[in-house]
Length: 429
Image (cartoon, rainbow, N blue to C red; front, side, top):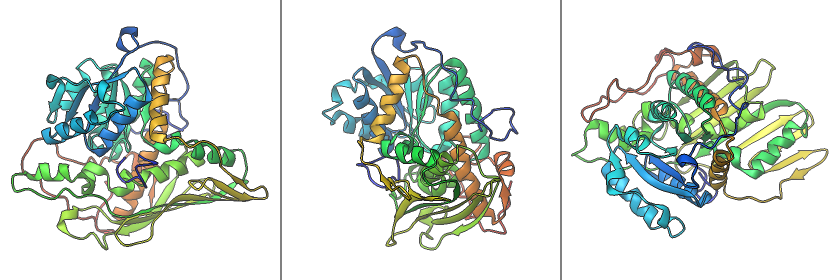
């Protein structure tokens, strides 16, 4: 997971039409036992798409989570990334024997995802830059594959709508969709949110949500790279590839907010943001800070901040204000008439999400996280739309937006860099 606080602790959805709004989930309900992997064998063949640090880490976690899991195919846009990731995986003693990728199953290029999915794998790990997620996931589900899907699942509203439909199809096919929104698989976070849902702080009045972090990597430039290659190698800094850091990173925080509020969505939002520190051309055109107020019909307000700046104090947590007390979600504690602190086990949430994925496949009861991963991604996109345009926007406006980010075709060549958004000038589409 790019931008998690540390690698040691790392990393209402009804689909009615293309102009549907998000409602109550139907994606988590029906399951029918069935064995759908490797012709009923004990082996689960894994294909990895996207071989950066997050993809490599996810592969290690997946192989560590199930002794019958074997990595058999990999793909990336870049050959050097593919080979570097494979070398790193083969150097992991815990999983090296199950990295069984033949030379002809290392795929490179824009169509590498199709080759991985068509190679006979049972489970696909989706870890490319987020722009490609809707297209890759749709192809995998059409091919009958189970999926681990890194966050976020889209960078624009058309992408979210595509994912909603794909996840509906996955449910019909009894295919697993497990999301990389990893805090959902953190025992401590599960416990404290359950306490909140059980009324430990009374009725929720407001939530303060923060993902205020430092800066992330930059891979530099190379005169041999086309501008398409440069942007893809430094994808964090281009909205069409990452969604901006509010979508790529702070989606974790907004996902916890959505979870706390029953995986519903706000009705309107407004906010501000910009570039104060990362103003150089090497940082593309994304912002380095966002601050948004999300409002619910119930009157609950969510005060969300996120930033990526060097030399500043950091804070990643949700503070829940209730009529009977407060809850600090990542600190795992509640301050109310009856104080409480989580003191249970704390295994790696990155390992747990893969363990639960494989168990659900083997039990014939595949998990489908489609509702909340799409809802939370749209939540973050809504925030970006508000900061980029400077407008008060409704959920319906944002979900039904026709703005589709990225080029019409994928090819190595010149690709103009989008301008930096200017609130009051940049238009909502």
